[in-house]
Length: 239
Image (cartoon, rainbow, N blue to C red):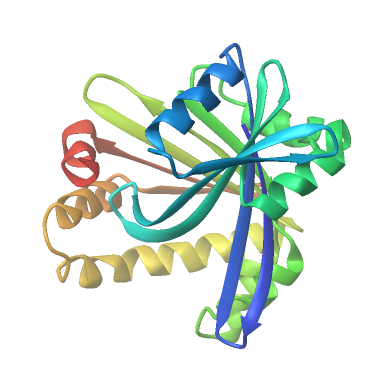
């Protein structure tokens, strides 16, 4: 799955993200759309765009993402790009995906980053635009400078019967930037315990688990962050 994110700034204190997902696999894309229409209970319509058929579902509801935060979804557009590929997102972004065609697919560089761990349940890789980082309000100039050095992020999620492991790597613009970013993350790790105590269960148990297993390792111009949590703690949060 490739995700394209468009970010805009409606006002000085708001960053709006619009995402389109391109999913490719051995699934039957047309059957998936038929299932989505059936689940929509009549709240779906179709439109044509450049020869493609787009199914638009009126969701107009709040969705809880991973048990952590709420996201408002108005309309979800789904389009078959080829027999085994789907585009999903807002209507405008699905239009853009159709316009881009194969030129808009994920680059070989990002795919390589996402596939670093062949045993992972899921892998990911992303470019981090400098403009987006410059707009982040992280509280102080030193931290802002460290964060703005990030050029790409990649990582993976692994799973056993008892644990879920997470690896996140930030690729920065220099060896010194990676070291400085590592010092900043270690400082935040030390402060984390103060804030975790204010969380309600089951978030508190999951956060304590993740913080206790956190490992921060600079390697050249990259900063690697690893942690793992018990599957039971994660399941308690997202169920």
